[in-house]
Length: 204
Image (cartoon, rainbow, N blue to C red; front, top):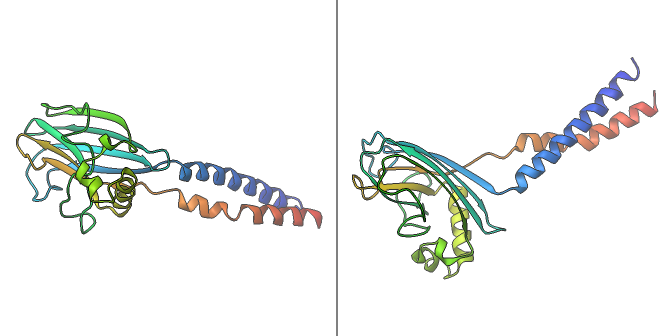
């Protein structure tokens, strides 16, 4: 019985250390944002039955913007798709186009449903709307910082435009995917737990 507790504490400490390593890797990866797309999220809202999802990964250090989108059920044919940023109030209102114009390269146009995945280099001016660059210091670095701030605050949205709704048929405000903060907090106690287990073992 005297060794059961130290063995348990040691095992728990090592488990927490493993969780800490996993959490560190996840936190160090690119920031990820996601949203559901709908007509009711547009400004003003519309009655489109269209739906979709958009996931955006943005790593400002490696200048990488990854976009994955699926959509279906649109009333009109797609004409463009963009990320808009940054609204005055998170989660509502409208903003200008931040990303590539007239639309994302190779985005499926002239359809009511589709899938899209592309990786952009955000250090290149061609990834951006020049007006967005000009509004943020005239550099791609300024555009990157502004978009990151907008994504983190919930002030950037993904918008799919169509022939039925030129201003946007379905959209959604991108929200940060929560980091494993709880795991990280638990992992902070791992060294203490390990030290306690060793101390108890020496006194048994």
